[in-house]
Amino acid sequence: MNDVEAAFEVRVSVLSRVGGRERNEDACGYCSVRGLGCYMLADGAGGHGGGDVASRVAIQAVLDDFTRAPEVSAHRAGALAAAANDAVIARQRVDASVADMRSTLVVLLLDAPGRRASWAHVGDSRLYLFRQGRLAQRTRDHSLLQNLIDAGMLSDSAAAGAPHRAVLTASLGGEDSFFPTTDEGAATLRRGDAFLLCSDGFWDWVEDATLARSLEHAVEPDQWLLGLERGFRDRLRPGSDNYSAIAVWCGDQDMTTRLYAAAPPAAANEGDPR
Image (cartoon, rainbow, N blue to C red; front, side):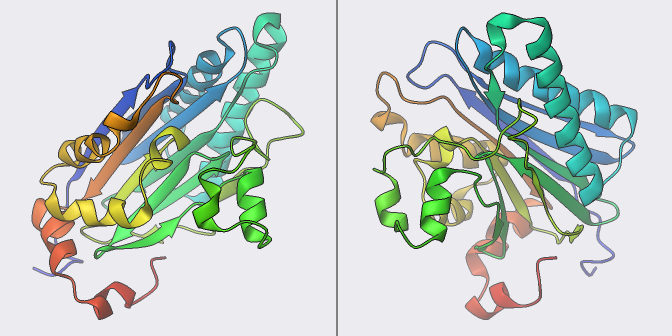
């Protein structure tokens, strides 16, 4: 049975921890409506508990809007991000205690039967797409740090210790700071594709190569996330950021893990992920 003929299942795992802080300001969610999936993650910020309010308001807004009108397209992903921004601003206006709250957001939309995926993000929460053992796509952070790297003023290796690394250039919660990025069009799904959505408190501990390599040793998405967590859990300290991740695997175990481990280098470069 070839890839076009074979149906594949979608398996999901969610991990969200408080880290070294008193409150978890990350929020995650997912749903499936008429065979279409929506997966989302938000990382909130703001005084007086505003961060956890912002992230949860954003997630609920996306869930409500997608449930009302499920669709997989870049336009729809962008519209869901806009709905989340509107919801956060609306909450700010009725509750002065959270007027300065902000949040990141990353949204993945999947049409498994139709083999299509789209996504949108704002801030520095990321989406990764792994295909045949290699990183096929990764969202670009909306952050001062990313701008410095893009301008050649800072190397990737120096970024870990850079000051102001958490300064965002786009976020939910402000009409003048909402600059979402969507994928240019629906990506064509392949059996064995693995998506990872995560907050900066997660990806900051794990290099891209480690994310891909760890797929070889995972049987289920739960095992993948927990294995990655074990790699940095002992390094957490008081004050360490919350960390959250959603793993979305498209295909059975053989296609998602063993194919990754066995894929020859040339296979990873064949075709365009889109």
